[in-house]
Image (cartoon, rainbow, N blue to C red; front, side, top):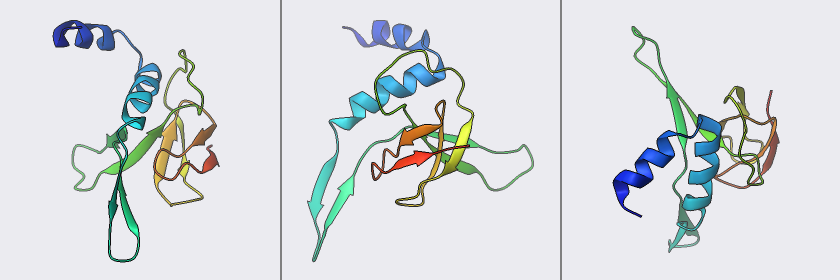
Length: 108
């Protein structure tokens, strides 16, 4: 598929559906690098950044999919902190797997 056609198709998705698609695409891209004593992991994730016109800081939330691939999620309005790694999370779903550490979390 050519890039322009792919982009046109992606632009038709709502935000929650786009998160599901990119979560699956990014899932195959996790890399592991040896460090002195441990491994360092790198992974692409989808994030939502919000800020105010006059504010100098921004809130960054890692966007979580439903945990199972299902299109039609709705608006991304559930927020919380990951119990496993402390990442700020947001999702269209109340119960999610953190894309960073894979912990199961309940959002409110």
